[in-house]
Length: 223
Image (cartoon, rainbow, N blue to C red; front, side):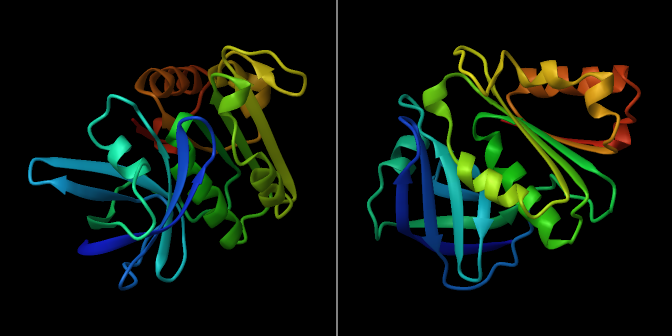
């Protein structure tokens, strides 16, 4: 883990409250595809965000701006060139370097570590069976759809299911990502990676265990 200065070099507003933020770093911190960086905003205020993607001297976050939050407005409202003090890398939400078919289940900005892990799965040449089950509230909350579909082209068998908990639209599933967890849907997968709200993570783990998945094959992080 290192303390570095991170300079905001690129910013895209993906939805009304979700931002893609790219930072340049002065050196390579050897980031793994499940880790996060912690912003030291004040002596008394630290905020951590998962890394969605990274290259040699750049890392990209996907951050939800919470209007009454202490950290995300400062980060999302920053201007290009603004510099933050960070600690990097942190985290133990570990992608297993195995050939076991993997299923990724997430909601909200739990997207970031799962997206990073799916990319790493492709880089490891684990290209057989992969599923990404992801949920948001409304159709206007969806982002990165084309990027996910392009990423899926690198796998022999890639399933992408998008859930909407409050809207209805053709081509999208209604209700919650945990509804996808059935005996038939999970039977081809051996490892499960879950990231999102505590309630979703709890319910997904419970359903998987009730269907016979061993705890050692369920990996999770919650926000």
